[in-house]
Image 1: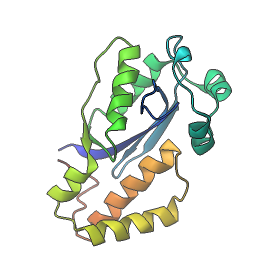
Image 2: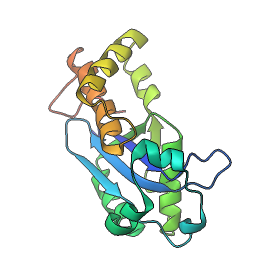
Image 3: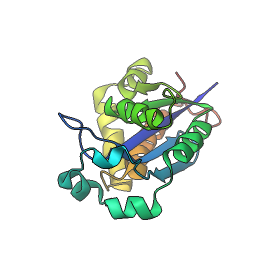
Image 4: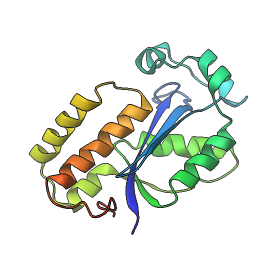
Length: 177
């Protein structure tokens, strides 16, 4: 049985009429560890859009990416290995776009599908008030927004809180699709 994991990307810009690229990705496993990667821009991406508004939200500068970012090929390989035993979920379809953009930069298709988190919540029968209460509790523990690690971690914590309240945790393998 696969475990659930939450993926979250931060990007150079929102893609509304822009060419944006992924700059950070995090994967938070349900009942397991989280990983985060800064992504060094490719030469092709250097001509794509960079929004100062996005930088102000996530706090990641181009200089930081050039200094501390990892090559896209390394990020994709490590992310793929980390997600191998998981069904991967996101709260936004843009995360799939940025995974595809990352993979395309490596000359590959997206290595795994990203499912919409709402589908999992519906499948498990959670009602809106339950989800809102769990998300509010998770926000108290991880209040910082627009940091991929915290955004993914907050959603993974929301799943753990929902599962704990419904007796669905089975050796850290609950919530699979």
